[in-house]
Length: 513
Image (cartoon, rainbow, N blue to C red; front, side, top):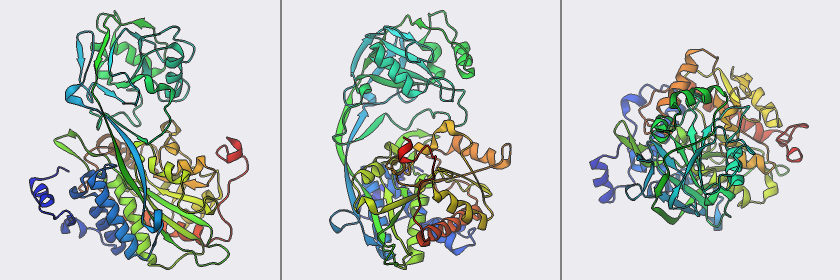
């Protein structure tokens, strides 16, 4: 949604604390009172006044304060730093100043965010004049000597060929100064969006540099490939077709050199996790804590899509911070046998920054944290009959999910699209890396069904776009069904005799990695 002139006037006159209510006509369609209350809380977090809750922004801070107030009103105890609701992170914010930056290959100027996305790093070159070589899939050991050159690679994202880590390793080994990856048009499950939201990187302040920080790193829109390789004697359409099919690709020099003049903007920002504790009631179990998490940050203001430049992030992930609020309100201080830590993490969209920081610097003793149940990637836009469950077979959390899902007539399944790597792209992952049982959920579907069509359409139209807003189509019955499943699961895990544990033989278990 766009921020209106009236909203800016309201902000300027000190009325920012007011939130725009969801239109009554839409709320009238939600017959279940609990689902209606959840959606009202969602509207409070993802209306235009929150300006997309970009990490480190004033809109994010407003949303964080609202979550803290809701946690407090629901009877939670502050579980942040120094007796507060907040755990603060210092972050380095790196941006490419678009009006002052230019990249060209030969005589073809590339439009940043449309033809090319540059991912800034602390040590990246800001001026470059270099030859360009096309290296095919850029598998380690195949590039040879590419010292002082920019390497253009096909960005294969499926199993069986070189992945992103392999490409980076190959380019570093060859001595290149840059890596440009052609976005794989054959990866239709979750294609890259053009324009991208912005050219920006956020890092934990003081985070040590990685080996590729000194490279110019970017992603090329496949639609721009023909202009980039013009004069090489190669046909862009044939290269893309071969790459999409995983067939052999040539290696060749491009006739045009890459010229880059980039203006890198640096600043340090502060953002906060919001943490509230519901103490346990069983003297023998209350020291065990289950983390219930969702990410509060969105994308904020970015490149316009269909005239809209405000990335509200309603389902990703305001709705599920709202579900944490709703659960706390329903309990209103009535604890489970175990303690529950309600965590609204920051910086998820920038690389799981808030959850990584919390796991590394927990605000309660690390050995008290026995599990994480994370809410993200949930899209109630079609009937809920099955759930994809992360780490389903790896811990006894998966057993609890199976039991509770059966009570709600929901089938469960392993991830049918592991090439998307969703396991490692949400806030449960830092917990798993630290040896803590964790799980998360995705709405599932039968292949070829109407549900699959809606799921695919959402990723084409709404995902990480301004169209993920309060006006998008919703299945209110499915939303309420998931919410009730979540309430039941939390109660089952919170009141069980035994804490979640890893299963023998799990490849994710601490001793297996």
